[in-house]
Structure formats: structure tokens, C-alpha cells
Image 1 (cartoon, one colour):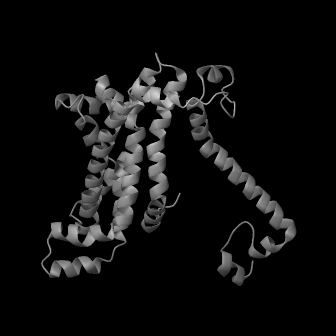
Image 2 (cartoon, one colour):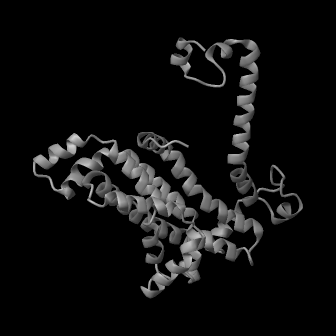
Image 3 (cartoon, one colour):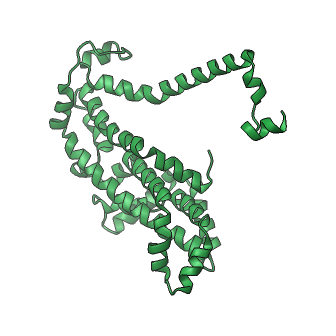
Length: 293
């Protein structure tokens, strides 16, 4: 590959000159098209099947579950799931738990990263190493200790049992700290010369420049809390206070299968819409952190 090719397209498996050859260009486009189609099937397939099953009679799901279109479209399945299965009630529980988890994760990630990146305490590296070490500990290992803790604090069956543990999310601190490390320290020093304290430095200088990474952490926090199943099931035994992800498997024992899937569709729609709306902010914020893969 020539220096001009490297400058134009960068190093890769196929050079720029090879891409211009018909014998290479068309097979390459075919492979790219097949990979794109496979990605769409794997990504959209489960969502489209859920939408189809939510509008199908139960008999269709039992006889021919892979049928591409329902034999009879039943829009009333959504209404029945909302009223008889009380999907709306459990969806409200989910919104409350997700909203609190998002707020706690955002506060902990922002303040923790600010302290480690901007204030830089004496033992900051040790604390940061300890935070990173928790990434290698599976969440199921600490379930018993975590449950005993919330039990001793009398937080079982309350939203606090879900909100507070959500703050212990090391990955959010990691990406937030990397973003703060990329901000010019001259701004911090100039603000401190003008008499700005830590609180004013964080609120007036750092946070206004951190909107992209705040959007990333917010989206990750909402997605993680929305799909969480195991810990809410353990921490909230009261069936009336459980989120939709926990309530649906229990309701599936007695309800019609198509109604349960209709409830699943209701649970899927909000996070999908949220991701579609804020995906640009997420990609932009991750690019600023320097994380890849």
C-alpha cells in the first residue's frame, strides 16, 4: 500500500487500490450486505417477533410460533394486558425504580470522577484501583452480603433497596473520569485562582462541559436499571411494588401467553425509543472518552 493510500483510508485488510478493482469491489459489497442483513436479523428479529406475538392469538404461538404474520391481528391483547395484568401499574413501578437508580448513579459517578480526576486526593490512585477491581467481581458474588446489608438497614421492599446499590457502578466512574481527564486543567487552575471552591468548580466549570458524557452515563444507567431482574426480585418481595421485569414471569404462570408477550412489548418500547432518540449523544460522548470496543 502506498503512502497516499494509507493517508486516505488508513491501513486495512483491503487497500484503497484493491477496492477500486471490480473483482474485489463487488464481492466485498456482497459480503458487507450479507453482514448487514445478518446484523438486522439478529438485532431486530426478537423485537419484531415480540410485536407479532403480542398481536397473535395464543393458538398461533402454540401451533406455529415462527409464523411471520398472525392469522388474526388482535389489538385487544395490548388493552387486556394493560388492564387485567395491570401492566400499567408495574410499568409505573419500573419508572420509579429506574428514575431513582439513574439519579443515584449519576451523582455517584459525577462526584467520584470529579474527586479522582480534578481534586486528585493523596490516595486517589489507591481508591481508583479499588474501584476498578470491582469490575472483576461478578455481581452474584455479593448478593448475599448486599441483601443482609439492606435487611439490617430496614430497606427491604422499599425503592431505596434498589436505588442505593445502583450507585456502586464502577464502569460509570471509569468513563466519567476519562472524560474529565481530557478537559484542560488550565480552566481548573484559572477558576481556583479566581477563588472558586470545589463545589463551584464542579457546578460552573466541569458539568457544563460534560453534557456528552452525562448523556452517556444517563442512558447506560437507564438501560441497566430497566432490564435488571435478579436484584429487584430479591430486594422487593412485595408483588405490588415489583417492576415489570419481575412481575411478568410471575404473571406468565396464570395469564394467556399472548397477553404476557403483549406486556413484554410494552416493557421493550420505552428503552428502545430512548436509545433511538439519544443514540447520537451516546456515540459522541463515548468518542470523547477514548474508549473503544
